[in-house]
Image (tube, rainbow, N blue to C red):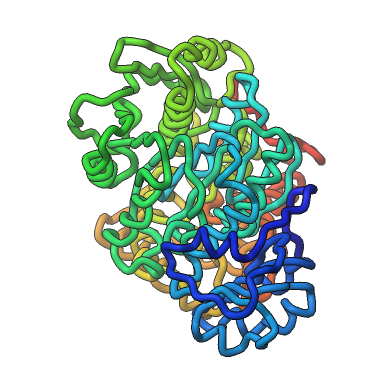
Length: 543
């Protein structure tokens, strides 16, 4: 396990770090006249000269691994009173009550992200659409000449270099180290997913985003937040003045648009986006800064027009299925406009208006990713009720344009040890929109897979019974077998949607990683059944 760090080593005195943590009321144990060269909260990534942050977790305390951290070269410790009990007397320590908050601020000092100017940061939060929107922001920034970075669920990119990601939003030491590395790599602008977990655990503290963007808020992660109100509050932290300079809010995003309205109303000067004809729910919204005024289906994607309150217009297109990708592209465009002076807008508009190779034509790994057109086979990350609804609606709208369209075959499951309330709801959604529902496993974690599938199946069955539909409901596990069966029963006119895992390449089964990539499994069986040729690339997203 490695941590990406800048080439140039930092040298910061421990007392300088402590002085910047005054809001956390630090107390000092031992000498502060010691030089720190990095910071880590994971004993496995500690390097010589590091400040080791011993944080209390759900089951363990970071101090439990203090011996390993010191052996690896840690020279000081940041911890709480409980952790201090484990720190040897000859090891300097900074003691605070809120270790996570202090950890992020300390990382900002150590990696010089307070004194130096980091890349212009574009942070995207919301339940659905974060990954796609950050890819779109990154693509547009690169197209107008910025040297870009990207941090998110799928990967981290730094000026063209890419590594896989472990978290949607990295822990504070990793995040601040990445900022220093981006600065060292001459990155001028970076797009980043900001999860509710990241805000709740203060991972992004010590950073100030040039532009923060909000997609939508629908039910998810209630296992952590408990209620939608607490979930919203975690997201809303990103839009405080301490965390962002400019705020862009989609006021009618997703199936529960009231949350976007609520967020915009509590901000002093938000830039607001009305999705207009691309909105999932048609509601009246007050005058907004930007509005989508036209949407036209073109092939598998859409053309659309954005209009500013001044009358300024831009026409562009997105070549991915679903109107929700129009929403993602529109938010990305508005965020980039917001991050630039008005005198630069014409350059952005010219880039967006290019007839060929527009910034929003590239497929995002595992997000409505098209593997085949006959049958149409799509892999998507949809793993909550709203995401699943939108993915299925997008698939069905595409089918509606084809007179010979066949069935929608859905393969999906629910995640173990997560919000259990959404399981039957997702089953009902599946039965409403799909002709064949194949319920399988997602990440069971430590939960019995069959017990996860049961309420999903019950939810689907209850919809069929109440509405008298002829939807076929099947339970097939493991997941690879379910995907194989979907291809086996498909005709060239059918559509297969594999939902829930997207780009992911491993399932967590009882704590063990099990290798599986929906895309590779599906491609293998598509070849076997003669639908595509060996080594065939993903289908083009335009006609």
